[in-house]
Image 1 (cartoon, one colour):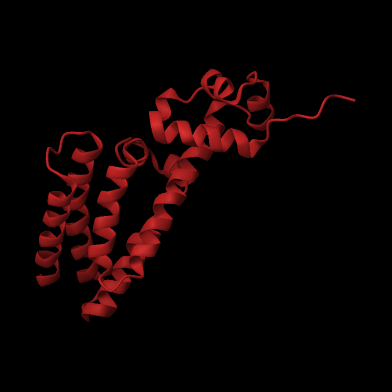
Image 2 (cartoon, rainbow, N blue to C red):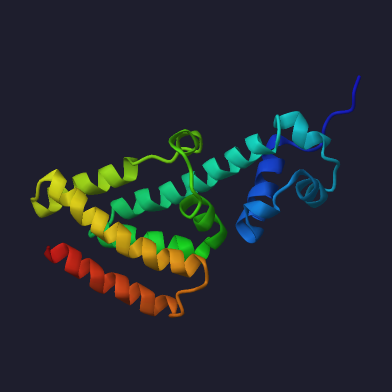
Length: 183
C-alpha cells in the first residue's frame, strides 16, 4: 500500500495563494510551491494537471476575494461610493492580485475560466437606478464613469506610480463620486 500523502490540495492552494499575494503570479511555480511546502513537486502534479490549472484556480480564488469585497460594498448606503473605495483599497491591499486581475490582457474564454463577469457591475447599476430613480442605462453610464476614474487611480497605485497618500487618493475618490452622483 502506498504511503498516504501528507500534502493536500487545499495546502497547495493556500500556500500558492499566499505566494501569489506576496510575490505575484510570476513567482508561483512548481519548485517554489514545493519548497514552501517542504516537499517534492509530485504532490502538486497529483492534484493539478499542470501549473496552468493551479494558476487558474488561484486566479479564481483572487476573483472570488475581490467579488466578495465588492458585493459587501453593494450593501452600503452609498453603493457606488463604497464600490469605488473598495476597488481602490483592493489595489492598495493586494497589488499583485489587482495587477493580475485587472492589468493583464485576457480573451473572453480566459475571463470566463477564472470567473470574471459583469455581475457586480450589473447589480451596481440596478441599485443606482433604484436608489436615484434613473433608468438603468443612465445608471450604467454613471457606473462606467466612476469605474474609469477609479481604475486609473487603482492602476497607478498597484504599479506604485500614484505618488499620493492613500487617504488623499480616497478623498479624491470621495470628491469624484459626488460629481458622478450629481450627473
